[in-house]
Image 1 (cartoon, one colour):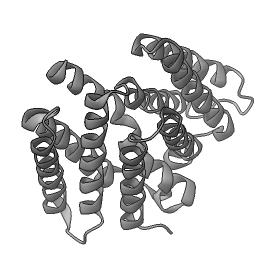
Image 2 (cartoon, helix red, strand yellow):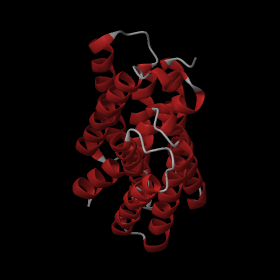
Image 3 (cartoon, helix red, strand yellow):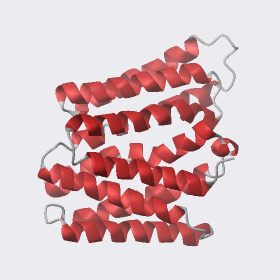
Amino acid sequence: MISGAFRAVVTAVAAAGIGITAFGDRPLLVGTIAGIVTVFAVGWPTLLGLPARRGAVAVLLLTAAAGLTALLVWEDLLYVAVALGLGVVGAFVHEMLRRDGRPRLVESVSGVVTGAVVVASAAGWLAVGSGPVAVALLLVGAVTLTAGSACTALPIPGWLGSATTIVIAAAAGLLVGSLIEAVGLLAGGLIGLSAGVLIAAVHALFGQFPASGRPTAALAAAMLPVAVSGVPVYVLGRVLLG
């Protein structure tokens, strides 16, 4: 069985990977994001205990590939939304192709669609761009996720642990924002606050799932906050920094 502390460490490592590769060539960041969504897609159906898991994994992998490819080709999240729409269609096609009587149909569809939203959101990390401001924004997002994830590894129980995670992530955002003029306190603080809330919620929610101790499921739970943070970081950057 894999503990919550291990999941927290994996989340921190994945977030740190984004921060590090943001300073390198574009393909390094693309490879990091692709790896994160692949690990998530493989373990998500197991984490939720979905039926027909192989088909669900296939839909999620295809959605992730379509979303990342669309962004790299057109450099616009609009086409990622199109890829997400195709992923939703794929979720229904997957159910139509099942030959097991389709038990837990609604649960299966909703689980696959939710996973598709997560893998599509990961494209937001690439949509941020590659200029100096974009790299600074990626760094703030990565640092706040890393700091918040590290907090969830500490033996702080209940709501106090969640509150600590949120406060530390927000403080990390403020600190990095104050050090990077291109980002600033407001954007840094809001990104940190968002990251803290997301990490605390994921840690509290998926830690209760019976399958969260299995390797692939635990890795999916660890990748979720990193993957889904892509679009929020992009949106906050566009709204606050232009």
